[in-house]
Image 1 (cartoon, rainbow, N blue to C red):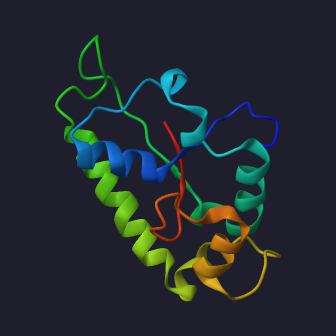
Image 2: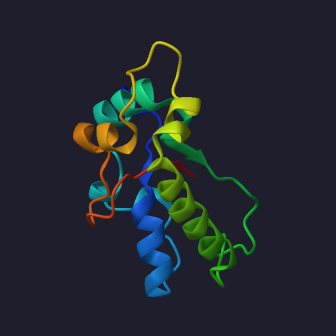
Length: 129
C-alpha cells in the first residue's frame, strides 16, 4: 500500500456513483482524489486492519463494462454503508483491529487520522476492485 502498487478507492466514491445512477469507472480512469493516498492508506491499514479494507472481485458481465446495469454497484454501495455504520461501534473496530494496534476509540480515531468520508459522512473505507 505504502508504495502505491495497490490503489484503494474511497468507499464514498461507490456510494456516490450508485446514488447518481452512474456506473463506476475503470480504476485507471478514477480521479486520484477518489483514491486513498498511499501513505494514508498504509497508516489506516496498520491501525485499523480489515476494518479499513474491503476487497470486491467478480467477472465482468459484458465486454464493455463489468456492471452495465449497476446491479453489483447498488449492492456494493449498500455493503459500504452498512460497514461504515457498523464501524461507528467501538466494539466492531476492536474485533477487527490488528493485535498491537491502537486502543479503543473506534471510528473517531479513524476520522482523526484521515479516515473520514470526504462527504462528511463519517468513517470511510478503502475498496480494492
